[in-house]
Length: 307
Length: 233
Ligand SMILES: Nc1ncnc2c1ncn2[C@@H]1O[C@H](COP(=O)(O)OP(=O)(O)OP(=O)(O)O)[C@@H](O)[C@H]1O
Ligand SMILES: [Mg+2]
Image 1 (cartoon, each protein chain N blue to C red):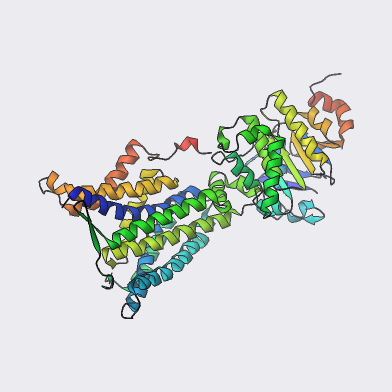
Image 2: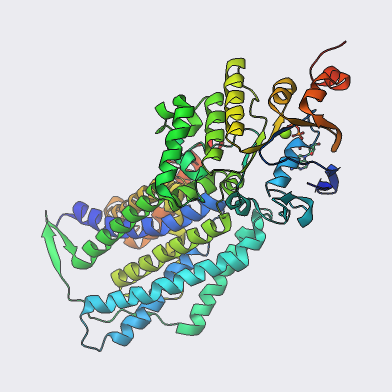
């Protein structure tokens, strides 16, 4: 088996998920300069809601693909509503407050959402029912599963769709205008409150799908799963250049690959002093590295260049 | 506008001014730096909170409305310093000017009209606005405001920082727009050009209107000549 190729495939899979989640961070940052630390919890909520629906339908005669789609269809609106609500009641009143206030609020919302999930779903993880037959293909000595192909394909589709919206629709142009200069955007007749709500809703929808994907991939969902995943996706957004859409996509995929390669080789490189259980460290090494050597990220403009 | 007052924090920047812009006319507001001209325009355009009945537009109080709502009513402000979206292309900037319109075909035609008016913009339609020269950015800012088909156009120092030739071009455009029947309130440092283009003028000093009247009279007023036209006689 080719470890290198295998780890690239695994890295691409997880990296696509990071990219989708990172987009949520970066879009919100781009428009209101807030790091929405509660974004990871939307991923968790998406997974939990979807797993509940999938679990309930698992015994029926429905084809597995339809069951998973039903899970997504349930998770997306729930997350959209939560995303919209958090902006509406928590961040909007703080829009002109010192920047630390909404940041701390975001951490607070994150804790609230986690504990809400704990109340609803309990302490033990939800398991993904064995409904999807294991399909796998061998390429060049590495294995890629059907689930991995689906995750990569769906992520790429969503990235393409989002890029189309942001760069080729009036609404998307208005989003970019608002992020550059909200006051002048208002003079164009753009209701910036609506644009901000829209941004949260889109980010939340992406997070919901990401939650279903990562849950399906690992086979479990748990009320704490959003924190680490969120922090990694945030690192990916910073790696790419926070506020920059292409950066979030690139950063997510790169981070996934770095992490997978790191996990694959750390054992042999350190004589098994460190094992692949150190996988989670890499994201943060990357984050620290970027903050030290290139704070604006790979594709981010230097702060002074912002219009 | 009646007895408009605007304060930043506790400090009143505009201390109760009365100013009216008759339909179809070009009126200018001149004054020294810090007089409150920009503040006045921002207040009219809904960018600053003011008493609801402090600003009347077509006879209706609009003081409480926000900027984005006023655009739909036909008000457009070209802000001081242009405020183009630097990372959007020229064409995207113009498209944002027409954000409130849904008649896509007519918007397209209007964009071509702006390009005819300012051929320099046409050549650069796919270029990001931040790379334009100051004069080109001013053309873009004016073109963008026209894209909303305003009934009342507010211009804040459109000649600021421009070379004399460009200033002339901008003023020609302003006159042309006025001839088409758009009502204009023009704030300017260049008092002579502004008064020559206007039917009426207002002079503002430290938050108050100190002089007003037909532009022709202001042009020959000795105080105006001394303070704003740099003449002594
Ligand atoms: N955001 C603000 N906060 C506090 N004070 C302000 C603010 N904006 C303007 N001012 C003050 O209000 C007064 C009027 O400012 P304004 O910008 O309206 O002047 P102006 O007539 O447009 O001047 P200029 O010709 O220099 O553009 C000034 O004293 C200014 O310092
Ligand atoms: Mg001013």
